[in-house]
Length: 121
Image (cartoon, rainbow, N blue to C red; front, side, top):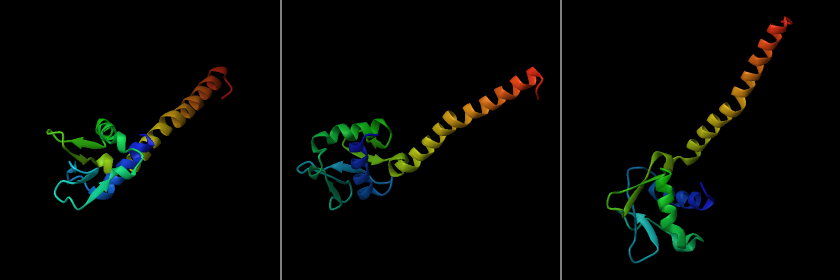
């Protein structure tokens, strides 16, 4: 995830706080607000990503941090969007296990087989 996506996702998390609410763009202002309560909003015009907001929302939806409604005007956070760091930590642990632990085990097993075949074990 890019820094811009992470920044916008954090702001969306601040206003949504759950996967059970829909967010929407306000038509006459540069805001993203709760669909049911327009007094809770995020003013994206104050960010350096104000011209990229639609692309960021689409990228967050493509990477499954958001889900976009069938109408295309509302979107909601997913579990991955509410807890991006936990999901990222789990992916990092899996990667480290695959790229560090498994090669070490294979190396030890290979060394033991080699020693056994040479009769040194």
